[in-house]
Image 1 (cartoon, chains in turn red, yellow):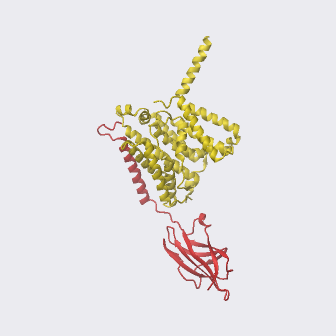
Image 2: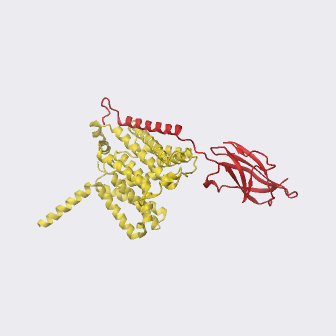
Image 3: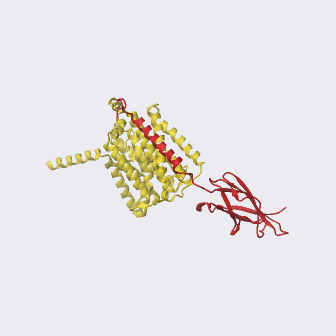
Length: 146
Length: 325
């Protein structure tokens, strides 16, 4: 216990050595054994449904920003309870969203919506969102073209 | 006449024995609390409540173990609450975002706690700054780091292995088993090793211990490291209970932890007390909180009652001559 004695190390040096070894074990573990978890996360922006009352044509436009740790593909969009699998004919934009990047989409809709209402938009992705994130929906206003 | 002398001697012997065993005083207080619970809120004794109480006490009691070491060595550690918060957040990030196994996450936060404790210790022993000021600074720095790395947001953990630690084993929460293991290891260290004796001796008379050739700076550093490690385990256990990392978790816990240590009979002046008594102190503080909740006493009143208990404990210590050095 006496730090002044020759050939012995003080308690503090012992603690420092012990903590250094622990830190090296943690770094080795994080570099060689584990890899970051794949987590899908995104933000939906500029989402609007446009309808043409004369022709009955309707489409949705939105931008998705990938805020997760892995690239994902938008497999389908869900508007309230209606599921539209992507890609569909006449769709503009890409369904592949890379980490940190944005993708803008314009998807024609099979039927029209009432202008002035709000429809909940939810994306089905591959890989999917975590179960606990599935309540996240983007309220989308319905507007008249022009 | 002879009989009277016998009884008075017996009474004196009992009084002396009672005064010499640290745990007995706090145990008497705890029994008093248990009697109070039976009178005020009989639902206190429901098995579900006891299980919940054991889970609740684990966080404070684990942190109190480390704090007891620091106080026994004659210093104080105010940074325990912030270390709890940081450990809680770091464990959640490592498990949820970096795929660490829950056990490796525990090892990691214990190391971080140890490093913070050592930093506290070095400031106190090498730079000769009072522990109160040093740990007050660390309290703020560590809390700030917890907010920075979490972005101020809560981090949910969905790892089943981690969440399973919140279950019950043989009628007792697993986190309480963790506490019992820590208590046994640290009590053995404290009571049976020379280093444990040095911790107490340093708190009792630092100069005398230094003159005996003991590395008392090292002993103090060790006490701070124990405190950091114990607080980190407490933060991890809190994460298990909450199922998430909250950057504001452990806020104000330093006062609860110090209160548990003082109510357990450890002298703030150092040198006197035991870890078992500290455990009883943690039980007293948590049980009182539990009784007040069950009795429907509001949160504001709870602060007043807890403060009064601390003052009563201080008065009892004064009567026992603990503050006289």
